[in-house]
Image (cartoon, rainbow, N blue to C red; front, side, top):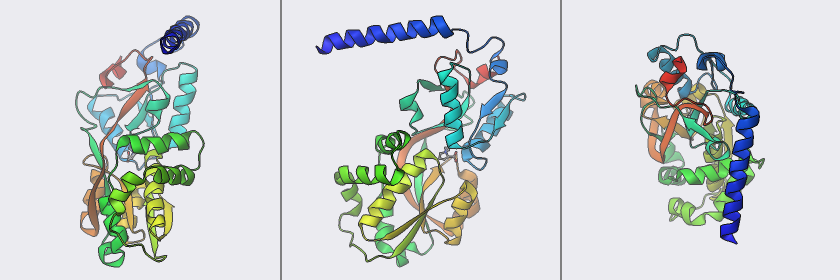
Length: 294
Ligand code: PBE
């Protein structure tokens, strides 16, 4: 039975692949890669680290004719969705973990000059004095460390339409073995207020709602505040927010860290092996950022 369905699945896959190349082959357009792309890189919010990195890529690879179009995570993924439906050329600023790699057949363009850097880690940062003011939260936030697949599981649920607080709560409930490693031995609290700031990137929506729920279960009155990237870092430095779990280092947010280093506390890495780059649908016949010059 298993074997049969595998064969059927393969046949279907071949059939679909066959159809699409017959019917839509050439829809990626004629002309140079640049022309097909309208010399546009679809970006996200202007203050995101990946936008600064992509501007650097344009400069270092001599992609002078290209424009980096700012938008948002939501607008970028909807442009990607639209292009893939029509099998058109598109290049976006992309990162991992992100549900787009589960949902679509997309690939990173190679970055031989290494402008986007190697693997990134996501760090947790707190405001000065949080350890004294909210020691239980400080401990949980310091302990917080999870895997890409965990963040990915919440992201996919949210992408499929679940409210972030619901997807996060379900994940926390179903993964008490992981959560308890962060909360073991930490005393419950009695309604103290804590504010976590974040940016509405899908990855950070998932992580912030998840850790917010963990703190709520411990007894905190949790407020989640969405901000732009600059204000996110400033909120921790000024103490307007207590903590954030959205700092991509060593590369993506290096400039923000440099600005605020002395006014914030690094509670360590909460996720490893993150990555940023330029992402295209796999049907595009290019492999490297250099191919954008073709
Ligand atoms: N990101 C997701 C962010 C960090 C998290 C890659 C879009 C950025 O570029 O700043």
